[in-house]
Image 1 (cartoon, rainbow, N blue to C red):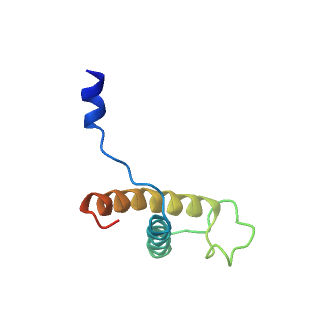
Image 2: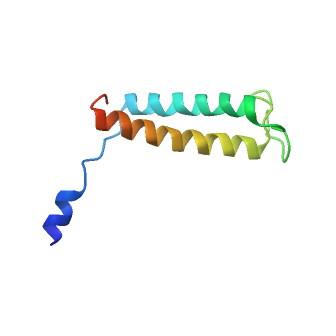
Length: 85
C-alpha cells in the first residue's frame, strides 16, 4: 500500500531563478492590485519607510504579500503542470 501511495504523489518543481521571477512578478501584481483596491491602506502601524512600501501600513503590506504568495504558488504550480517551467 505504501508504494501505491508514493506513486500517487506528483513530482514537485525544484527552485530555480525562473520560479523566483514568477513569484516576484505575482507579488508585484498583488501589491498593485492592493494599491488600487484597499480603501484605507495606511491604517494601522506605519512601516519604517512609507515611501518604500507605497504608503501602506503593516496590515496592507502583510495582506498584499500574503495574497501575492498564494497567487504565486498557484501560477507556479499551473505553469509547472503545463510544462512551461
